[in-house]
Length: 335
Image: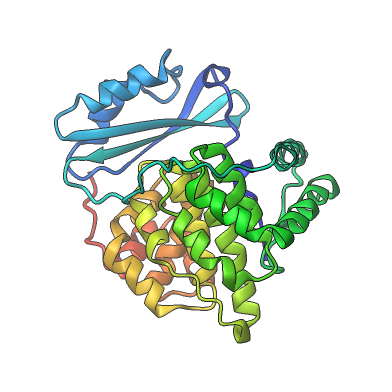
């Protein structure tokens, strides 16, 4: 199965680089209106990004009923950035995270340097449009030769030092080092041995750790489907809970992983999505930025019992609401 690495998804580095806003996608709303959120933050399609991301988020958090807000700009279609605004309202479901660890485990500097070299190689491959990777081995393998050479080093280290990586993932006070460990431990030869470690990382307080763990779990899921005799069962519980997150990366990567887990049909997982996070998923599938709305839309289609081809046909016809209704969402009134 081909995929795009998590590190290549959100490519907008500097906040001030995109002078104009394209689509604005607001999510997490139950009572507060999107119009109020955008007005508070000073966001408007065709306008410029706020001078201060932090000030704009603070302004949203001052709205009655709002607890937290997160604004992310995703670059770029020419000079246009797509903006995503995550809002957590008071009393809304939210994924629970562990406290920050304060242990003394650390990674060797050589592995940290290898990981940073890998990120550079992936970024270069993405810039060339060559960021595809193969997950069928149970860990990501890039088509790009340079990036793949770094992944070979991950395999070597994980094969010899799985316990070390586990200690770092669970106790290192550095979020950056835990994120590296979440990626590298996925290359350990015994996938069953590391399943609990990657599931543990889904509740890490650092979003980069969670994203790397989800990406690694997705590869394990692909491998498990190809090799049912290995009895590799990726639990969907925390992947579904992360659909409540205000962090865009949590929602995108959990959607990708859940698509992989339900690729051959998994009624238990689809039922859990229906019971726990269908509203969040439909909210994402209504996003204006189509390339980000399509993956959750496909997942809603599976919840509705549709084949992917039928879901895609309805997408092409612009009949998103038909799929949402079939999945069990109330009919949306037209304004």
